[in-house]
Image (cartoon, rainbow, N blue to C red; front, side, top):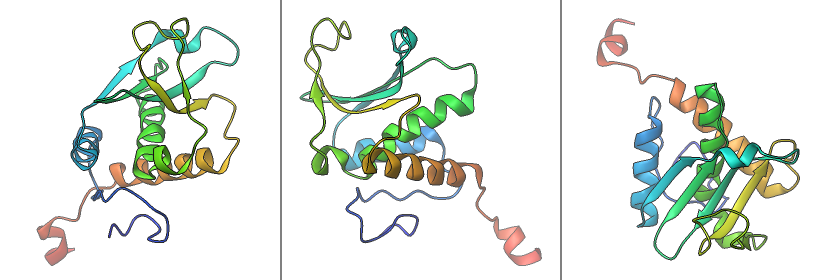
Length: 155
């Protein structure tokens, strides 16, 4: 049982070691979900006032995270971590607010289901709040470096 997440909350069994990289986290989530995960920047997410930061889409055989462009790598990572947090918290299984895309919404993703979408100014429900909180925990764990054997022995 991962110690970095509340054991009373249903979640995907993925270990998140201190110092984990985003690529390592993505690989572990892909393995746990048994399906590939693509992450893509999508400029269209910034084209209106109610622009989205990120979307988690599901197709029959893959997960897709689309995120808004950002000049800040930390900001970009937070968009991605938020969507990964939805996956870790199994929000595709416990939250039924997802919807289907129509062909006019995002070209090339017509057969995908929107699992979660985060607006820039909106963390409006318990699932969004939980995902943002877990994204913060993930970001903190990524920044921490594991203690080396040398440091364990010599401080």
